[in-house]
Amino acid sequence: MEKKLRFNSLTIHGGQAPDPAYGAVMPPIYQTSTYAQTTPGGHKGFEYSRTHNPTRQALEKNLAHIEHGAFGLAFASGLAAMDAVMKLLKPSDEVIATDDLYGGSYRLFTKIFEPYGIHFRFVPMQSTEKVAQQITPKTKLLWVETPTNPMMNVIDITAMANLAKHHKLLLAVDNTFASPYLQQPLTMGADIVMHSATKYLAGHSDVVLGALITNDASLAERLSFIQNASGAVPGPFDSFLTLRGIKTLHVRMERHCQNAATIAQYLAHHPKIESVNWPGFDHHPNHTIAQAQMKDFGAMLSFVPKGANHQTAIALVEKLKLFTLAESLGGVESLAGHPASMTHASIPKDLREKSGVVDALIRLSVGIEDVQDLIEDLEQAIG
Ligand SMILES: *Cc1c(COP(=O)(O)O)cnc(C)c1O
Image (cartoon, rainbow, N blue to C red):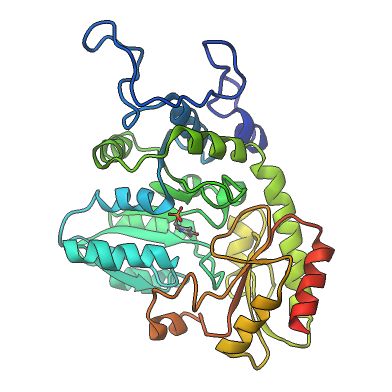
């Protein structure tokens, strides 16, 4: 494919070609662990499926294209992808990470990598100044998640990239919440993009898979060495499902964003709602950056009902019928969650509340159903 395709075409065609064997338009699910050799080392580019698998490779090429990267790597989960990035580091290295991070990321950093001697500082990254103040000669990596979960703060990726370049740090961006439909961090100067493809990329709540994308050949080589040596790879069927999901990313995201905008406005005007966190509001503290950096404002939002506490917030999410009470996000179906007792339960209460994740906060992943049905469901639950 010589012609430079636009984003929507890339989701479908990026890195893809009919299968050479029979012309299959979708890559076959090569459900094999090993490949016949004619003589030792005499093979067609595939030896063992931990190292390479044709279905996984088709996905990895597609991932690279949609993030405007040169190299894509697929992992068994988003956290397995992050785990591979952390293995680029050595004991006594320091990482500066976004403060209101996905709970599982915080757990991976503090419970797995701290004991191996890697140090983490969690900083509110809406202020570039605050990040700069935390950089020491031992700092090696900036880990950015934007928009953040569940407070929907937006971090200026270009500013973080400039800071990283100035101090010779790596910049990794968790692009799970936005997806490449909304923002492409490599084009803003990031070194590595990470995805929980479990969410918007696969998009149908039927697979767990992670991804890393980079433009840097030496980073790609080190990461694919780790991918093979540590072995947290996805199977061919999960790779196939993710690739199939990505082909409709752009149409799904468009409707996700429209529905979320309608619901954000509905909640903001509701007399029983105290506050709504969604970067599309003019009064959102990072609205200007969101507008400049993102194509639209995404489909995640959170809100606090008036006078709510832990119990009443839980009662509200339990009353929802069309919104499923569940962990995760980014699927076609709408989900509701209570971060303090679900996604963010592994973050200590004081740290959690400092970044706004109060006990009464409710998070929504807005799906692509008829928005009026979603609003009627919220209406009956809010009461
Ligand atoms: C879900 C998620 C992860 C972890 O990904 P898994 O696929 O569940 O391992 C990391 N970051 C963010 C922002 C997520 O939402």
